Image (cartoon, rainbow, N blue to C red; front, side, top):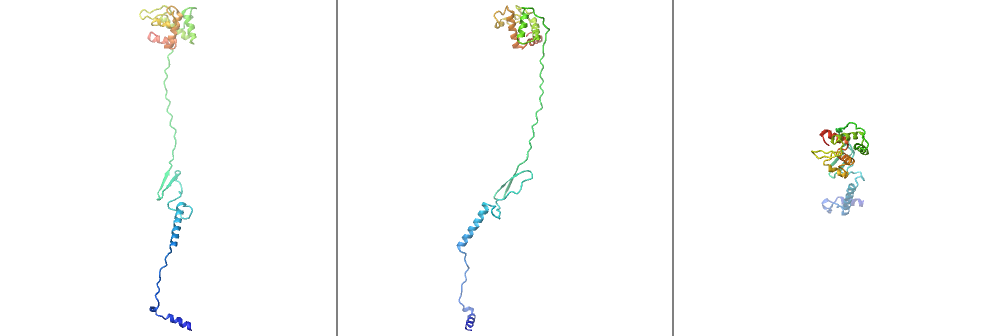
Length: 221
């Protein structure tokens, strides 16, 4: 009873006569703030360095999902979210057309012939010429052309001389002294004249028939 009356007495104390009690807000300790800031920074750092380590995906790193329909594509990712796609265009290789062959007309060399020469007398100038022609690998046709050519020029005479031009000998060398390259006896020896004449024909016309064709066309060789 005494305790009950004591409690009742306390409750009946007027509010104005009760002692004043100041209530203050609880402050966050600096240690708690530092710990929270450090944890937030660590989370951001892990997200940036390794975007695949957590469930949260960073907006600065994206994985290319697919390729274009027309071929493989390369995707360049930029921090601001801009995507540059480079597409490899397809190409075809075509063979360069071959140029049409050019037909070049080849002029057919005209062959000249002469009447077949008779068998030369042994020891004659023509007999010497026959052996010299064969020694150069020419056939009977070339010998026949040679016989016709020099028959026209000198009649196969060793001392034949053209009074107007000064040509001399069987091949009618102009001047006759040219035949000295074949021998000193060029003025009297049929063999020396024939050797010089065949050398001249070979260098100028190729064959006796070539020289005969020139003589037929222009009157001289």
